[in-house]
Amino acid sequence: MEIIIVTGLSGAGKSQAVNCLEDQGYYCIDNMPLEMMKNFIDLSVANGGVVEKAAFVVDIRGAEFKPDVRKALEDVRALGIRTRVIFLEASNEVLIRRFSETRRRHPVTGNFPTVDDIENEREQLKDIRSAADFIIDTSNMKTAKLKSELIEVLSDEDKEETFVINIMSFGFKNGIPITADMVFDMRFIPNPYYVQGLKKATGNNKKVRQYVMKHIESQMFVKNLSKLINDIIPCYAREGKYNLNLAFGCTGGQHRSVAMANEFYDLFTKQGRQVTLDHRDIKKH
Image (tube, rainbow, N blue to C red):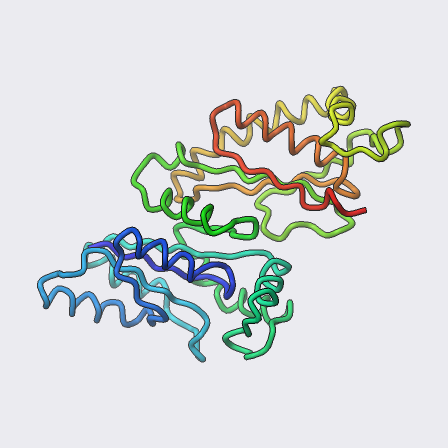
């Protein structure tokens, strides 16, 4: 028997994940307390093991969400059952927008969520997040992309082969992306904003990118960071983490961060890695 536990923040995509798991042949149970998993397994065994693959959705909807996560997992794994935990999350901004677009109310407060509501939920879920085998940030994912990510997670392929590098550019004046695993400050590079003819362009412009990358410090940064990332990816894959979120920032998120994000996107793509790219603040002025 195989068990998948799907959990995470409200609005992060658990419903879409369940649909995907059902398509993959999993028997899905919504809002199941972790402490009851063993009872379900015993019942399944007593009935001849009719359920070979099960997925449990565990979230904040219970009034007292304080499960002993590690004990529950240990109890199930002690039975020799393969159990994996998938935690879905997204940025505060994205979650608030999703609730607004769907006109849904937060399952705990009953109101449209505030940043404080979401941060409170993050705090209550921190233990189960720390026990997760896979953490998926759905901030920039559509349903089809989430489905493909889940299929990769559930596959038994070499995780280094399916490892995804998510690259983002941003402006520090608009805030640091909270979903980033690593943040790099590009303000050490001379600013093309002050170069005549480049001010109104962005890092997507060929001349801006050439200006950013012509400096020796830029070239050394790319060389050293690319080596570091390639060296640590096997370590992440070994520990069950299959993606890495890199964020490159400059003052406004228009020039240096965009050019550097593009540079690494092209570099990792040429190496045959799976890469995504998002210029968060490129349209902000």
